[in-house]
Amino acid sequence: MRVGTSLLIVCASLLVVVAGCSPEKAPASAIAEMTAVPEQSTFEVSTTDPSPPPPPAAAISLVDPATYAWQEGGLQGFFFTTPSGLWRCAILADSAQGGSDDQMAGCQPSSSMPMNVAGAPSVPDHYSGNVTAPNAILVNATGDARFASLSQALFWRYDTTPVLSYGQTLSTNGFSCNVQESGVSCRSDRSGKGFTFSTGGYQFEYIEARGAATPVSTATTGGVDPVLGKVTDTYQVGYGAVRPPEISNGGASLSGVVTEIVWNSWGGPTATGTGTTAHVTPESPSPGAAPQERASIVAFDLGECDGIFTYRSFVWFFPQDQSLEAAKANAVHAC
Image (cartoon, rainbow, N blue to C red; front, side, top):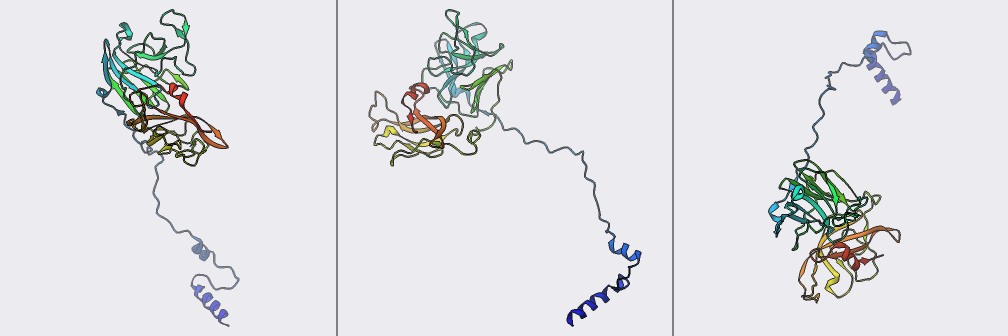
């Protein structure tokens, strides 16, 4: 048979290696020759080589202090507001206060109210000395950072205050301040003492902001980005969407429409951004005739709406006209 012939040829071919294909044992020398592992060239890998250096830290994004400079009367400094519109802050070159607080950095609420900061301690009232809620957080050139009750809005300017964007740092006159998703940070460059705060809490420590802001994403949502509100009308735009570029309440009025939205953050307890909408004022009461200007947008009240993770409320407003807390009285509650 053909198969038998093939086996015979294979068996004959192996005679040069093993003494035949019989069941007899092959000589030990032949077995050793067959099973020997050929030598391989090797090289030593050093286990003491240093690990590759870590990537360099992102550069600090510094802004031009001249953009934020302002003075009135005896007050002189560099003023900014946060993208959310919640806080007004400044590096004061001359606070007109005298003493160690003549030069300092600090923040106050954008409305004339106590600071809404979780855990903030009570402080002596600036008039009576009685214990009261603070209305400022500050640090001077040499002293410790602290909360305070001030007699006036030292960290405000009374015109259109420029915004210090997330990830940017204002450094001038021996102080540095930055705004991040985690809060506002300021320090004395001379002493290194400073503070970081948000509505969620505070620490008396400066946190450096490096590079562009990284938006808060899905850390609190179990991997699912929240949506903006719940769709309740066919003509609504942006409702039920993630980071919508446009919002319309579905009506005919231009005051209920925001376009060209740029979101600075999304996914945290609040989402913030800016967009273009009609700036209705007593001088321009008609939305159709009002100028189209950039406004701040804040989405909040994060939670479930019909089983969907949602920002259940949102509002847009002009920080130069009113504070976020005041604007919330006209917020859209979309769940």
